[in-house]
Image (cartoon, rainbow, N blue to C red; front, side):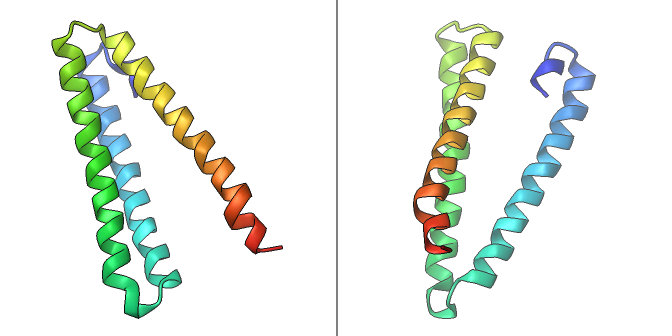
Length: 105
């Protein structure tokens, strides 16, 4: 999607496709929550999941807005978002190896 950010119409199509995949990921997350969570804690877990998703959306939107206001270039903003994604993916891999895979042994 970021490779197409300079062509408005291609970026719009890529943004739609990206949104489709994000929506699919969100639906899959809800499926996993429903399958793996005790019904007694379901509402609480779904609430925390929603708070996390909404916080990440708001924080990303605020970062983009403030970064543009501060005069950062589009490349810098995209690079920073990409690096944030890589850092979070690395943290997930570490967390999964440390806590989730350890329980399955």
